[in-house]
Image 1: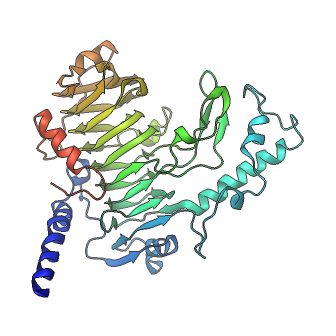
Image 2 (image 1 turned 90 degrees about the vertical axis):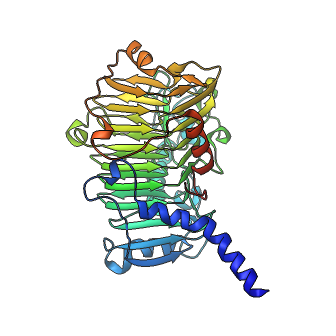
Image 3 (image 1 turned 30 degrees about the vertical axis):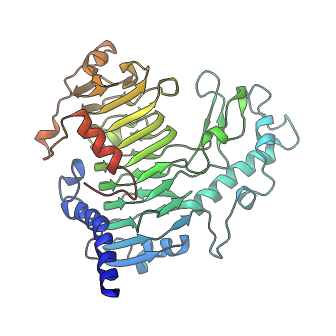
Length: 422
């Protein structure tokens, strides 16, 4: 009887975990497969971690951070966890900081900051700056080259961690729930936009000058702290305490994001850090997004500057009245969209693509609310040309799903952390 039970348990585990292993054995589809490829820390030292301190130690890898290593994350790891296990908060980083006092120093309409508007304004400005730096030092964890960072089981989570890659290469991040950090010291910028804007500092994950990176079967959300529950700020609008879910910038290259989920967020994915950064980004930022699920994303799925970006077999779902756009075509970018599914009830296909100073966009075979999307016509109306100057099939091997039902079936079943692979 015990033998039968043990055999049954083994069979049940194998139904899930070997599929995840087979994904690693197959390797990534898209840009991350080019050049030397992306293998992560295969055959290196294995670490198993369940605290922030242990994760930080594993990333350092006994003083040899770029040596091959596999880091297995078990359960929840909170970026605000101190070495003694306690959780740090706003007042630990900046005792005496107060969001209401900070806002009052701009005046009722948030138009102009003044150190002398109240006797506490200069102090609040200094507390916001020092608090932000201390929070960053606490929650930022940098993944070095030749690393596989993988969640164990269905519920491995990085909570409020600012996960970064900084000049790292050959990195795999897989099967993790990444909850975007709350910026306790977000900045109000009166001159940003027509009425001012909040600018939070931290992403769930940022790639800076990274190469050959594969993000696979991950879930990116605001988690426990959605912006709809943030305090009220100026003009009756909520304070923006989150930045992006995933940003890729400063000459990063050869990246694939596959079978992942991005949900319930405003500015989801930014590729390229600024229109004036062509000296760093031109000729780089080659990224593939394949079989991902975007649910209730307001914008940036992704927004692209400079890069050659392939967006294939992704599913976009949301409310038309809560969406600005899915694909943003920025300066000098070449976006190749292929067989994506857009579902925005009572929305127009113009929600699928927006022009942010770009020129080149091409779509093949996408659908909008169950019908052919005809996005090339939409893009043409925006002044974009469908001559993008490259074809993914000339760069790497891939086999897209060719029907709307096949794309939806695969993505809705497999995208995100803790989901079985195809």
